[in-house]
Amino acid sequence: MTDENTTPPATPIPDSAAFLHRYQAFEARAAELHPANKAALFAVLRDAGITGVHVHFDGYGDSGQIEGVTAFGIDAAECPLSDTPVGIRKLNFGQDEPEMLSEPLAEAIETLAYAFLESTHGGWENNEGAFGEFIFDVEAGTITLDYNERIETSDITATNSDGGRNGTLLSPRALQREEMGRDGGRVSAAPPMVR
Image 1 (cartoon, one colour):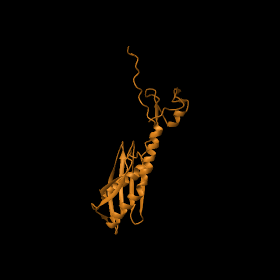
Image 2: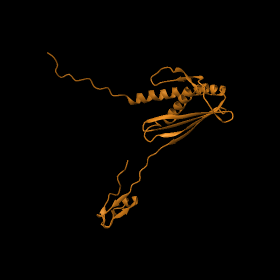
Image 3: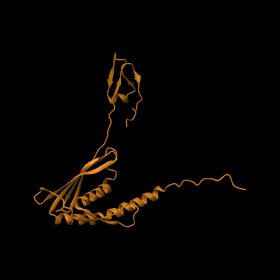
Image 4: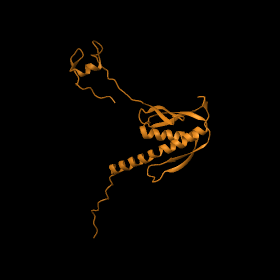
């Protein structure tokens, strides 16, 4: 005799607290790599005679990128970036140990800019997005971030008209009153949210 009432296995429910803990541990370990990566990059920049680098980024609509990398020499004039390799350590989520990458100078600059941007403003490219600039000051040994976030806003304006004969234009303030227009039409005290 067979049991006809077999219950299918339950779908496992993800443990969000455990995932969050794992991701926070990953972020902390990835951030530990920043000082050594910065030192390796700045050493190569100094050896190349580069005193500063500007990195422009822009993103919105769930997509973002580095728009340009400009290097400056001792006389503050723009100068080209060589293909000199830079040793960068990178940790991906789920990896136990970081991997060592050897990237040309321009790519190493972008790798560090993305890493710093993700660690300070994760999701910067989503929705309305953000734009800005990193300034690598090689002489001072600093990286400064000028970050600008886009924000979308809405204004509400209502028009009440009785067919064109005694139309009344209302300000958003009028929506908060109980009566509006010449005919005393009712409007809720709280206007609907516009998203």
